[in-house]
Image 1 (tube, rainbow over the protein chains, first blue to last red):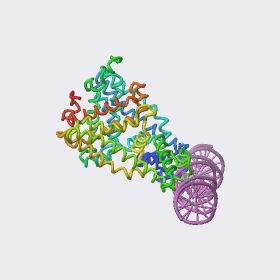
Image 2 (image 1 turned 180 degrees about the horizontal axis):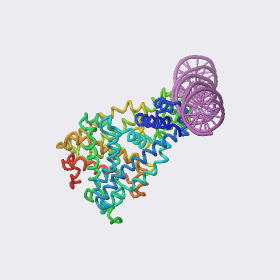
Image 3 (image 1 turned 90 degrees about the vertical axis):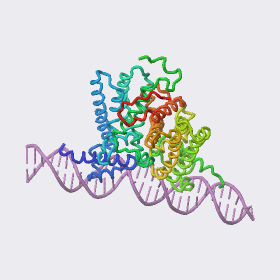
Image 4 (image 1 turned 90 degrees about the horizontal axis):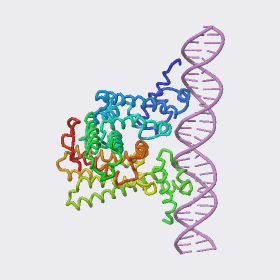
Length: 222
Length: 222
DNA sequence: TTGCAATTCAAACAGTTGTATGAAACTATC
DNA sequence: GATAGTTTCATACAACTGTTTGAATTGCAA
């Protein structure tokens, strides 16, 4: 490969545009204009538009997941195979929140692209996304080890709510700022992380009689 | 005028298709095929595709908000101007959850359409959506009356998290079912509502030291 | 240099999109 | 039953999409 220059220029431009404007209204012509390359270059280097998107997503997906798992593994090792639930949750939502919030110029294009991908669900991405389940299962496993007296159902709901709060806060950050007239400071990322982790922790550790009357205690006595 | 038949057939078909497949890949030709009307009928009756979408969204938006506010108002009147926080939250997330989850055949097309609209953010909708802020402010007001010792910041974060859990659960319901291998039963809508309300309530009523270290624990779950 | 493959480029292609047109088919009023 | 107004229809249109093509250009080895 003589020069990857064109190839990586396309990748960078595409990621930036998709992150900013979404998949819906970014055309190949927008991308090649931003990258200062010829229109045919995309098909020459990637085969098709979908393959370009897929490569972008796979690359970032692997990187993000590795980052999260690194934090998780470190925490579990330090705790002798069992990490505090707060630390697990922090490893789950921290990297994404840090990448997508905070002062404008510090936001990672990569993370913003991943958020787009998790929202818009364009075909080439949807096809790949099922693997993410396996990734989440690892977190579910760590959470189970951390809270052995909790049923699987509670674990999964807690996981779901943690991701919900993180993603929704990112996605609707503008609206929250506007609604609260700036009182909710989304630039203070560590505060946001702490809030999400705190609420998710409460969801997972609150008294068992929180809601399900007599239903849940039967089958799962880990 | 003479016969609204064509007009309402288009509205119904469009809503159904948008709810099922999103705005991205539903064309006017898909809509008119589903509605069994001529292609030109859309432009004749609505002016343009965007105006069709806008009318759909405005209609549903008004209906949903009226439903939520009705529940809220009833609760506040019954409590003499101050409703329990759980009831307020239930009025906020209940209608949407009930419309979008539960047994397949009971799901409201209207609610599913609104979820799509809240996710995909197509131009004609984005333009209208800002009014939703005023609607949410009414809920923030009720929450403030219900929890007078809470700061505005806490109120807004609680509101944000409640919506986050409701919307995310709807949007990722398939994934949660798969991840939990069916253990999380999303057809049991009232259980889902109870879980969301319960966690959001904890977020709003937990020990005031929420902002401090992540170690704050709260056993006062209602 | 010559020769050859890799890369770039302008241009065109085939398909789809939302929209516009003008004639036909209705509907109701007189 | 003729007329005027509304609604439907087949069809065409212009703009845009991703993709392909084949010629020009580049880079590098012999």
